Length: 176
Image 1 (tube, rainbow, N blue to C red):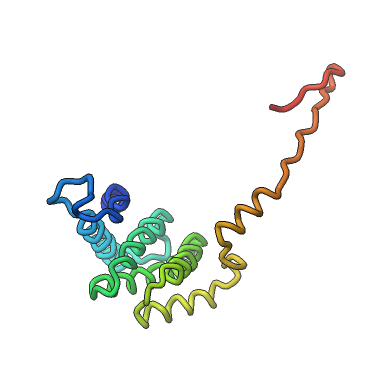
Image 2 (image 1 turned 180 degrees about the vertical axis):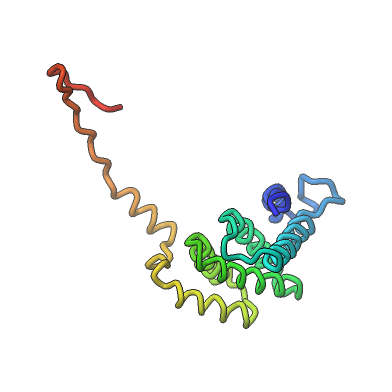
């Protein structure tokens, strides 16, 4: 799965380019590479679930699944993207029983789908609503807009570092 994740990371920055303006050769399609990698990740995750189950999967699988889900969201309403997105969300829900990061990933995917105005398949929308309710305690209070977040960070003033006095001598040393 990690190998496929690297393909997505390599080609995802080029998704915004049109074929004519892309710095890549004409025969290279970033969308095809990303879609193929995300589909392969979904297949491998289904195979892993059938073989071992997802209760004690390594937490890196959450990040890999999250990345694949973002590509599936971009490819909606393609039928393969719908299938793979629904399976991935179900897998994340199962993983969320053991990993807090999977709960946060489900919240992030819900926020992203709303922010990008993506019409989710009915089953995926219901699943995200169910997980929003189920894991409400782990959800951030509200999605903070970037402007509000900037204002919050600019209002916080750092505290000065107090001087340390050593017992062996009366010299004052500052941390720094």
